[in-house]
Length: 233
Image (cartoon, rainbow, N blue to C red; front, side):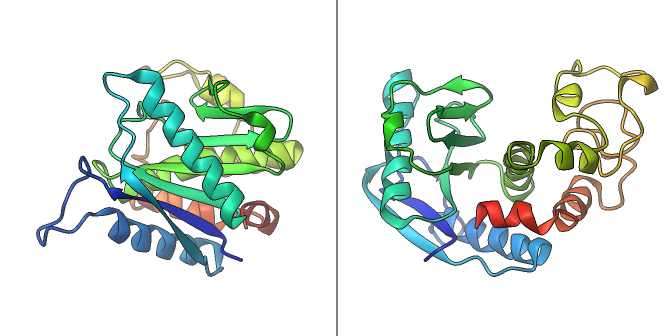
């Protein structure tokens, strides 16, 4: 059974091409899964789910594209039974980073948008789908994956997640953006969270990290307990 279902649109007319005229999604998939293998020490087996139409653009018809995309995620989830899915787009799903769903609680697009127009009764086991934006690249998809992992970790082991970060996840994510926060706003961190590395005083401050954002994300993912990777496999 695959660990990851890669959702691929046969006619991705909006997605960027490389210098050879090939869509960049498959290349980013290989690079991203290689990074995850380095961090987790696991091999990630993939299944490719080809959707025989264009990518569901959200611009102009807000709900249609979002609903179509979520039905594609649900179909891939039903068909392959993989631990999580990877959908490459171009930002037209509204810039959402991932979808998460549990039996009885429906589907949610991050950040915090309920997709109540999708048949939530079909969710019989945890569903996780990372929405990759091919207009951005590997650092950004790794950052979004980190957010997905934070939410999975918080769900399966709240106390363990808080200990790993050094504080409750919500405490950090609710801090104001674009301003320095006082040293008392967050206690001394352990590994920190995706937005706040240890010692950071504002969101996205990776200036004190060797290798910047990429170096921090690699170290953060590499230090996760095996139970978190198990939940995604």
